[in-house]
Amino acid sequence: MTDGVPIAALGDLPARVTLVEVGPRDGLQNETAMVSPADRAALIDALAAAGLPAVEAGAFVSPDRVPQMAGTAEVLSRVGRHASLRLPVLVPNGRGLDDALAAGAREVAVFGAASETFSRRNINCSIAESLDRFADVARRARAAGVAVRGYVSCVLGCPYEGPVDAKAVRDVAAALLDLGCFEVSLGDTIGIGSAGGMAGLLDAVTATIPVNRLAVHCHDTYGQALANILVALSAGVSVIDCAIAGLGGCPYAPGASGNVATEDVVHMLDGLGIATGVDADRLLDASRLAVALVGHPPLGRVARARLAGADG
Ligand code: HMG
Ligand code: MG
Image 1: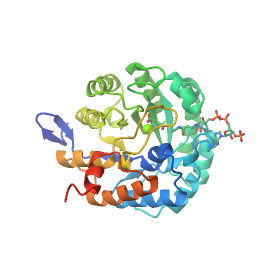
Image 2: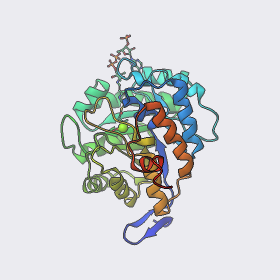
Image 3: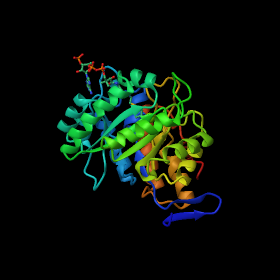
Image 4: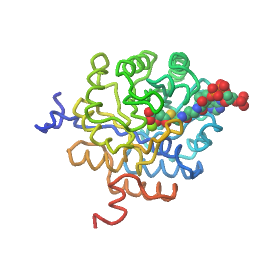
């Protein structure tokens, strides 16, 4: 790599990282508090004001299955104008895409899995069926000029099946890229992965998939997310998903806790000299709003320390 940050002990790290903030979707989908579309839009505005370039705004899924994401169209209509802010929304099927297009979404994300059981529990179809659906979604989205991101869940373990084969992850990721996703985010849905597991996974996946088409999405259930992200950075990954205040989980991944906290990732990247465009102080304004909306303290360590005044 020629444009990296050279740190001898770590190899060359990317000079710049794109953070994809998933708190208003992944974070709020797992909260007991039902946050109104107006408040969700205000949170997105605060995240954009802190400099986040992409904020997942919600999901066009069944409101019976994930009631917290009802009103995503209203969220999109209420978000203020921010130059070049990306606002991806989750779309599981054609119905979701119809709703997303009607709401004016410019980026959608399809979400598959490397585990059959998780796929059935989460979106009620097999992996093969999901890829057929996503192919149709991606074809129609792209014809409408809408960008398509992809997820693979359970890349380092499944809440139902246990260990997951890296080859299954690579196959689903390759299928998502083939059907038109511009990037695939590898989801450690239950946050069980270790640094060694992440290194092995990325070795296997990047054997056939260019690393610049990959992102990582690390839940922090076992407290390993930052270590796993550092491994991903040293493997050349430069897109990191994260959630304000460390919120998050998946209603179909029992025992999974929040995503890696955006505040923690920004602190680590600032310390490594890696540019993100995010202002850590303004990010804290978004942390304060997020905790007020969900009604409990932040799960990430940096926000916990700073909101408690540990930085003076
Ligand atoms: P289904 O029950 O198989 O769908 O749901 P169906 O086609 O049989 O339809 C049943 C009813 O749902 C019908 O309504 C449809 O119209 C309606 P009825 O005729 O009974 O009145 N329906 C919809 N309504 C709204 N939006 C839609 C939609 N589609 C059908 N898009 C479905 C299939 C996928 C919709 C359902 O299983 C679902 O909504 N699942 C929720 C999945 C979800 O949101 N999971 C959490 C996000 S994924 C995640 O967190 C992981 C991630 O963060 C990465 C990681 O951490 O690894 C991304
Ligand atoms: Mg997730």
